[in-house]
Image (cartoon, rainbow, N blue to C red):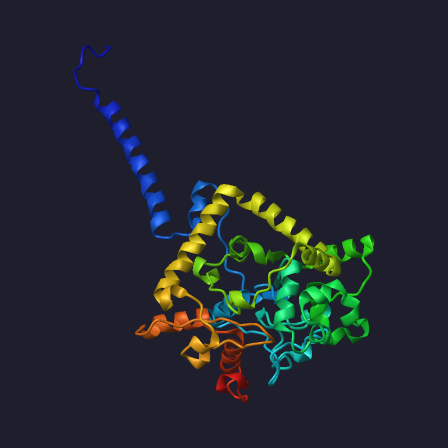
Length: 404
């Protein structure tokens, strides 16, 4: 019989309303926890039909190109290796590179004759796939990083000015690009690797090759087949979001401070005509960069979409700010060499570049200090540190500039 007037609702109806409210409160609680307790989105997506999270990827080959923010990525990989007790393919003996600028050979790796495979390879080398495969497992994740060739060349000119013959003879980058053949000699390739198409060279290709369309397309396709991801330095945070997704790592694994960055006073402002000349001189690098810049954004749109990407980038930046507040003195402002108090944290200085580093906050407890030291440790010191851990029976790598 229908209910009359304004009397109380039946018990069953009230219970339905109560269940709806409970479900809404439960959903709200899950969202709050995911946001404010920094729960990884991948951990809750299976509840809503998303892809389940698998184990983290631990076999990784990073082709470390030059002057492309690659030192920052190297720091990420070194930290992950140390945290998880993974083996790293480090340069043999007193060397700091894996044979660069010669094509990589497996014998350039310390301990390769005793250990069949390593987990991580990330030091500078010139890519040579058959030899890399002698060192790395079959299920290795390959990735690299590129930078706008105009700014990569500007950085190289400053950083390698004193020992690249083509740069040494040129009074300025403007003068070099106005008449590059006056300074650059094709026959001195291994000494002039930083002066033309250096990223193309790092991938194992000929930087002096003619810009024939079929050849260029074939080489780009070769990179695409081997490398599962190519980061872009101008969009490093977005790149790291995608890298983290591919590697199935935690947020803190990919948070990083800028390593090996220059001060503003050692960066040259380039006129528009100089930039155009740089693009033309490094045309093979430009094609590589254009292709993988488009590829990166296509993958970001397909896998994350604009809204989620913005959220993930902000999470990354927020965590970086938190760690800067925790670890760094003076609000995290980078310091020049003379301002860095701890000699072990002073970065290597090269050419005309003024390379910056960091001062840590005093009074950190031991555990926090270890975390913060890893975040700011320059690459040569970190390599020497890992070498000592991995090969305690061998003489330690000498870092001579630390005694200056």
